[in-house]
Image 1 (tube, rainbow, N blue to C red):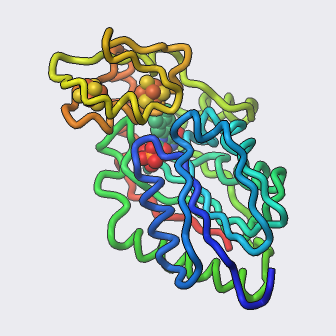
Image 2: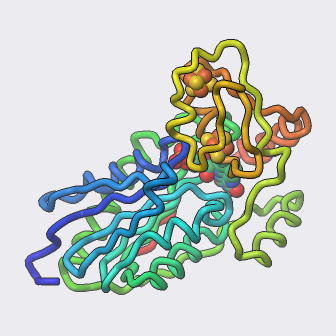
Length: 277
Ligand SMILES: Cc1cc2nc3c(=O)[nH]c(=O)nc-3n(C[C@H](O)[C@H](O)[C@H](O)COP(=O)(O)O)c2cc1C
Ligand code: SF4
Ligand code: SF4
C-alpha cells in the first residue's frame, strides 16, 4: 500500500436483522476520501462467490455475535481472500456478552490473508429479546463508532498495522450461564442453536410480501405453505425482525420462558462498546 492511502473501502457484513450493517456504515462514515463498496453476505448466493482484496484496499467486516461468530462463519470467511489487506473487524451483540467472537474473527481474518488493524464490539438491540439493548446503538454509541473508524484509518495511513490491544474473552459473570460458556469455549466449531430455538410459526397477518424469503440466509422459508426447513434454518431471527406485519414468531413456549430469565439477568446493566486498536 502506498503511503498516500487506500484506494477503496469495502464494507462486508452478515447482518440478519440489520443492526450490524448500520454499525459498519457508521464506522465507515468516520473515514473520508476513498470510494466505498458494499457486500451483503446475507443471501446464500453472495457467499458462493469469491471476493479478492489487495494491499491498497481496506475491508470493514461486521457480523452479529452469538458469544462466538455466527453459525456460517466458515462459509463467511471462506468467500473472502485478502492479500495483506488491512482489516477492521466488528461484532454487534445484544448487551449480554460477545464471548470469543472477536478472537475468532481475528484468527479467521488472518487465516484468509488479512492484516487485522482494529477490532470492536458494539451493543445493538438483542434480536431475540428486544428488551435487551433497546434503543442501541444510540448517539453515544455512534460517536464511539465514528471515532473508532477515524482512529483505525489514521493508524493504517501511518503504516501501523499492529493491534496494540488484543481482544478479550467477554463472558457474563452470571453463574446461570456457566454451562453455555463452557460448551462454547470447548466447541470452537460454529454452533447451531437447538431446534426449539429455530422453530417458528407464521400467523394470518402475513401478506405474502416475501421480505422474509428474500432475506433468509439459508433459503429456509416456504411462504406458500408457511413452513420452515428447520434443518437449514440457522436461527438468525432475521425473518422475525424484518417482517413488516410482525407475522412470524417463536413457536416454542419453552424458548419464550427461557428468554424471560435471560432478559432479567442481562437488562440490569448497560454495557459499553469495547474497541481494540
Ligand atoms: C441466535 C442468536 C444468538 C445470540 N446470542 C447472543 C449472545 O450470546 N449475546 C448477546 O449479547 N447477544 C446475542 N444475540 C444478539 C445479537 O448478537 C444482536 O442482537 C446483534 O446486534 C444482531 O445483529 P443483526 O441486527 O445484524 O442481525 C444473539 C442473537 C441471535 C439471533
Ligand atoms: S415478511 Fe411477513 S408478511 Fe411478508 S411474507 Fe414473510 S411472513 Fe408474510
Ligand atoms: S428461517 Fe431461520 S435462517 Fe431464515 S431468516 Fe428465519 S431464522 Fe434466519
